[in-house]
Image (cartoon, rainbow, N blue to C red; front, side):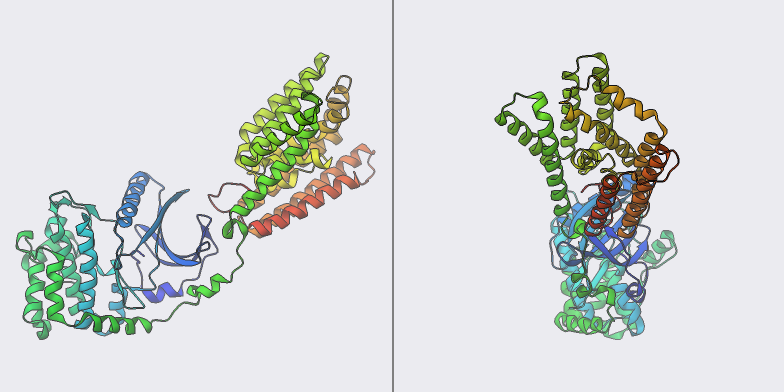
Length: 581
């Protein structure tokens, strides 16, 4: 978890968002927003657990610096596996955001706890637990050459078991072999003079900040809080005063330790967090009793219903989130099967009439399509054009084969590689003997522009395929029958209807990524497709409305129903998610 900017009460009142990050993490609620970005409580749909995700915007001129700092924080935190340090699980960049996936701490920050308790202070036992835990975390970090540089109440978490955890190493710096590092920005009121002035820093910088936090936990205020760094420096130079003046029970070793840790000069300061912890814990009380007391305090905080894991474990998640390999496997199997069917039809026109050759070529194309589905459409399109060109005995079919090859090559380069379902979208007309069969799949799987182009391309392939197969791919004498209808109004309406229907399907599903909009897109696209075919039939029949073809209409509706089912099972296309099966 990282720094929230508002109280715990506000956090638990937040409503969960209907959103998923990184195709895996369902947002449960927001833990706060600040200059760094947003911290979100999320449900890991694969491992069935809660995590905290810091989402950092990368837009603008400072995007490179933000990304560099976020990655540095992730790397630094991942080095520090310690029970009192919040664990970092992963770091990802997707679209305009960087995501730092961290351990979820079921509790609140020290700042939130202090705002809830009477007087804004902890008992001596509770402070002893706090000092011992944070010092243990800092000591481990220092041993690994990491200076935290931003110790403050909002960066200290306390969970419901009373365990104290240090988080947010966003300002952390790596110390040199000599133990020194470069000063980085921290928080005014908790930074020592050397950090404010940009001088060399070392472990004593964290000692100072920890002492300020302990002072605040004991007495209810930060001794150096000020509206500016200059005024904070003046307060540090003046000194914090005597803590025993406000709490006489602090007189003696506790007071000496605090004042020694808050010395303006690093050379006069307590040298290590271990030494500070040893002296303060001895003077303050029993850390074990403090842990029990903190556990009791945290147990009184209400829990959010949105944070109940049972509400999320029982949720039926779409396959794209719960089992992302299933849609991909289905797309590969479907592409491989369709590729095998079409390749088997073309193979006799290119290879010797030997079943071994034909079966081997078909199996090879199918295997390549299974490994990378766009290869299926590429191989089949190349084979189709090659068969037409090789069997051409005149200029017309030769030219037709060349033009078809150029068109399909352009389609493949611009559209096919964007989705694992591009092969079924192009080749379904060959399998179902209907030029409109690929529209529903194109609208589901591809971006609007690619879907429009694929709707047109699949109609052309479906128009060419029956004549090519029936003639053994020797199209001499058939070119006029294939090309002349393309300039007639009914056929133009039919072709345009395929492209428009695919475009409508895709626009709705991409405009608002949700299952409902994907299904609505299929329904609207199917209606547009059937309507365009009816209009084409009316034009062809001299203004008489007639069903264009029960077979074509049935294929369009069947494909739309099947794709709607796939939409429900697959789930919405998520932001930044590659369009794939």
